[in-house]
Image 1 (tube, rainbow, N blue to C red):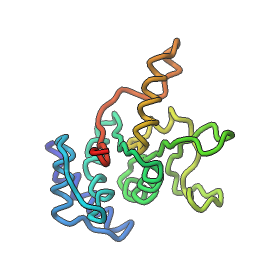
Image 2: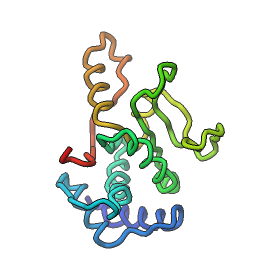
Image 3: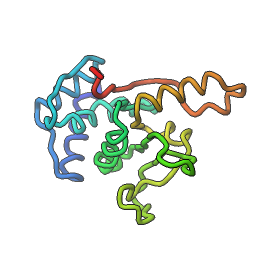
Length: 178
């Protein structure tokens, strides 16, 4: 909590420099509300994706990880793609875990790497990684079903080395009413 003003200011400046968006004061207040574990109601188009960057960054500084959980597969991929340059500028790793799209896709997780480009337009700068590596990122975006089923699978393993999630620390639930 003591780092909140400086952390939020750093995110605000990084957003302005990397993606050309500056948090409005009301968005910073929304970030404080989310950091406190409360519900922040915002209408579509008011910048929830940008708001979440502040508390996610602040809580990732512990080194224990922070999650953004959404019900929407599209948002689990789009939001980290949009916000990754902010996190990268701040020295934070970001990953996305999403439902398998095809049967041959064995690792439906991606980690931001600004030097990576395999020509895939929708995932430029995101390389495929294992789920364990995605959960090891400072910030992990994903759907509630993926987080939930990974949690259940981890609780059924015989060898703890087979677990993909690490100890749970901080999460923001997007579209909490869903």
